[in-house]
Image (cartoon, rainbow, N blue to C red):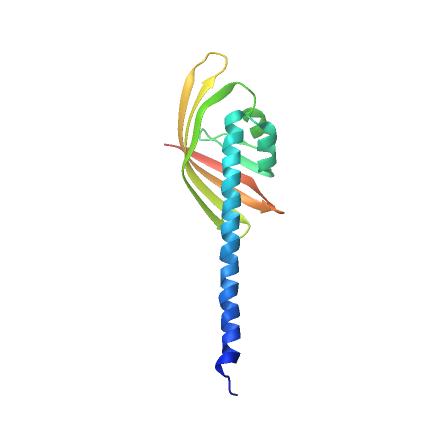
Length: 149
């Protein structure tokens, strides 16, 4: 069997193009996750229950640095109960890695809040690991864990 360069060029070109498509999709997914992470940070900062509801998966497992673990309903209720308010909240050194329908997100949480009842201020300095899952066309927070620094 004889194969000339023209017959060989088409399969090589096709393989090259197919390799670019997943990389482009991963970039779009990474951008979508990054957008949702920022929307989540903003919703936390302003205690927006509807915003948090929309960004969290029904199966959410939300772990705090003190060992408490909350499901979605408990997390949203506690995050928006009005007992404290954020004075500042930053997600520094953000890294996102998309792996198929999952995204691994890590960052350094720096926050300051104030208790509404007595005005007492407190600071938090944490390392956060979030796992986001693509559910349909949307990325939802599936789990979150934190460690005190």
